[in-house]
Length: 396
Image (cartoon, rainbow, N blue to C red):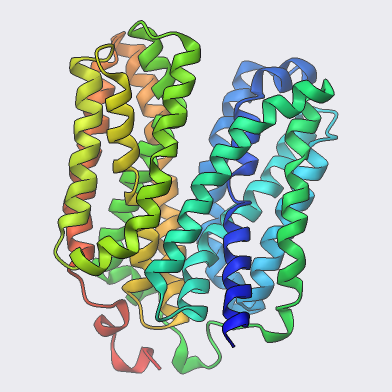
């Protein structure tokens, strides 16, 4: 039994390790891809917004897919889509083909995002925070590794296609163990009495507090990925240093994420953690407004620590539900709208900068997201489980 739990835990972490490679590998090779395929600047802009769109649209439909296929089959399907999408994207010979295969890979990643919390709830009901911390660290590592290794791989083989396609091997490695779990699949709705009506879930204050918190942190995170380097470069930092600072920003999130179970065990339910994440976020963006060139490493560290709100939100999806059906419904209905709204933030950041000619207004707006994380997160932290707020006939 113990060996089985270790095996399942490892497969969940491997799943998470594949969910950002479709994003990270293209971002650092975008110029090479656009030059080779003759992609216009407008189309390249569409490509950069695809992750959030796919995470939102596919995320909303994943709950229904899980109810029809089962949790394990949906996970295997997600990895299969990532595998096929990444593999075929590497040989795409046109802009249309590249965009279509990107949608495949990102759609699989979106499904993987949603199934992570119910997988944790189903297989580790007594260790939700612990397994959430592990897969949260793996998600961060997925983006960090794909961003840092894709360019060296492309340069070593003389083609961006290698840098983009090599991550399909990791998807295959993750898919194989999941195939062995298909015979022991888990459905989130085995009978009508087990179902959680979507309307009731949407009327729950917990759902909307989580949507606000998730949207605020995801929007801020993608604004960091897209604009942090440009902000510090405009302040006088060299491009190479700016890249290293962005790596520092993402890297500090890994040890914090691994410490989350300990922090939640001691501070959970008090509101301290979401307030801390919000305060760190406000401090980081405020530092970039007041002294962008004085201590950029400090601002990067503060923003990276504030990004711990991401894994905390995913953990709360599991901890504020009692059943796999509840976790799946909440995960889908939070991540879909959360990514959709959050996707507007990096776009709005760039647009506001273009209109005003200054980074100050967009940075003030990004700092305000920290306040939303603190307020909405406190409501989530102090909330009772989702099922406790639903009428008895819908709980099962």
